[in-house]
Image (tube, rainbow, N blue to C red; front, side, top):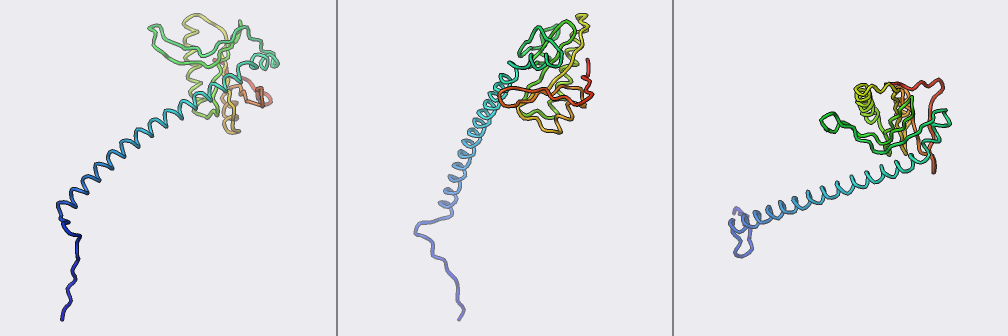
Length: 189
């Protein structure tokens, strides 16, 4: 005698009811997914804001001591400006400089990052080129130089910055130090 297998389904369970339950579950999953995306965007926004605040903290640690540190290198600056926006003749934004130190002969533009990388240095070169074009248009013959500052500067980034001709300003405790190799010659724009 052959045995046939039978499955007992709960009473009243039909294909239509199972399908309806699956569709309801699918809608609930879509809503959960939308809520998760919203939470993810909010988290990203908060992390970005926190990163920005950390960058501001690094700026506040660098700025107070920077003039004295360059003075020790026999570079005296009369004026220091923060967060300088550079625009073209039509008022279009071109770049922003975190710190700009000026005297009659030299202008040093300093980019400040919590942990600078090589892309930050390349971007800063572009800002210096913009500064140079703007200065040329105004017959400003001063020499323009660059520096990168950070709370954490890795050796590869430091080496790349020096190779590029940038001063490197590093956080050390509650002050900063300017790190330059022997025979360092800053690049001029």
